[in-house]
Each structure stands twice: as C-alpha cells, then as structure tokens.
Image (cartoon, rainbow, N blue to C red; front, side, top):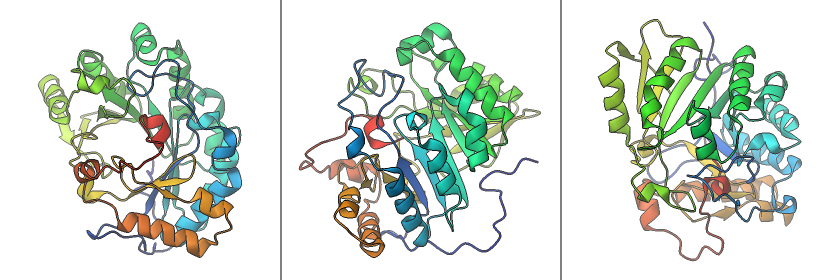
Length: 347
C-alpha cells in the first residue's frame, strides 16, 4: 500500500505545536507562497493582463524561506505546503524543496501547482524530498481549458499528471474548482479519472478572490450540490478518510483513487483549522478571509532574531478569528495594499 503523509509513521513522537489561538486550535501546517506570478490566467483568479505582481526584491529569498521554515518547525510546525502563484516558476524550487524536506521536525513537504511545468520537474521534485503534490485542473476539455485559463496548455498539464503518477510521490491530488454552467457537467468525467488513476480528485467551492468577481454572477456551485451530483450518478460510493479540509471523502468500489469535496467558501471546516499562511512577500495572514497581516520579511531584514520572529508568528495566530465569516466582518480597512486575487494571497 502506498503511504500518505497522514499514514506515515514518524521515527519519534512529534511534539505538540506551541502556536495556538484563543479558541484552542493549534497550528502545525505552514502554507508558504513562493511567488505571485503565474503562467496561466484563470478567470476566477485574475484578469487576462495579470496583476501588479511584486518584483523579485520584494519576495522572500531562498535563505529567508529556509529560515522561516526552520523557525516555524522549532515551534512545532511539521507540515509545509509550497504554493503561489505558480511555485514551479521559481528557479530555486528544487533547492527550496530540499531545504524544507531536510529541516529537523518537518515530516512532510507538499506543493500545489497548475501542472504546466510539472512534466520536466516531477522526478527532481520527488528526489529532492517532495512527498505530496496537488495539481489544479478545472476541465478535461481543451477548448474549455483555454476559456478558463486563457492559455492552450491542457496537454502540458496532462503530461505533468502522468509524470507525477510515474514518480514516487506519497500523495497526488487533483484540485477542481466547481463552477455552475462552466464545468459542473464534467463532475462525472472527473470521477471516472479517479477510477483509473492513483489520485484524489477534489471538488472545491469557488472562492471570492478574483478581480472580476465572477463568483457573484451565478458561478457558485456549493459543496452540498456537488455531493448531490455524485450521489445521483454513482450508487457505489463508500465513505473514506481524508484531510481535515475535505468535508466529504468517497471511494468507488474497485477504484484506484478517491473523491473529496472541500467547502472552501461555505467554511464548514474553520473549527478544525491548523493552517498558517505566509505570502510570497513574507506576510502572515492568520485567515484566508482576513486582510490583517503581520510582517516577517521586514522584521528579518531589519535584523530580528528567530525568537522575535517566533513572537510575531505566535501573536498573529493568537489573534486568529473564530472563522472565515468573522474574519470577513472584521476586515482591516486600513490595509494599504489589499490582495484581491488568490495569486497574491497564496493557494
């Protein structure tokens, strides 16, 4: 049986995270964005011309990324996910993965990618210590892929998926953003994909982070509706286990892969949140839906030691709102550079 990150038996008992909030939640999972830029222009993420991306000097360096991961691990973080933008656009991505994977206390390193560059990098990423990979793909149809991403790269993504399957990753997941009238008619096709391939297909609610706000124009397709479609078409679904964000997990009898539903917008999973988010320019966001930020990059560049950085991290997470709805209500209107796209926040 292939081990997953959650199945793996640690060589020693992990210590509890020292990073906690007012509601008793502890945080051992760091989601670290490496870059804002992306080689696709998905309609639910950014306008066709792109965003005002931060330039390289504003982004965390390789050494700064390594330092933040080591500092977080010293406080009990044991899982790291590298995101973007498109993280494979970083020329130092293999070095970043290797540094993270060999950091004392880190049990697993994962990465989220659109898959366009994955074919040539999958083997090297695996060799560097990457244990899990999520690939974003919202359609299996070429014309629709071009419509959604504004790029003709579907075949590249498919080859990237095959390369990932050929590598020795412990876990491979396919992230599908479900959109009404856009790709909701492909749910059955994605289920068939999980029948044949050793991966988890995850249907994700559309998030309200896009410049055009298409989610407000009838594209939202909720978790319960996704579940209804699955149950309507497949009578052999059996409940299975998954991550804390996967509210519903199924496997068809005899299938190689699994299915999952993530209620990203309805936020039914906030009570179990264990995530710390750091943007590509080194800001902690203690909730995906909050504009409040805590600056680690400038603190590092001003000479702060690890103890001072840890204090910023712990204070940021202590102030985490009870859920995403509360975070949205207390929106920090003083933010000088509000982030309007997931590529600026980190996936």
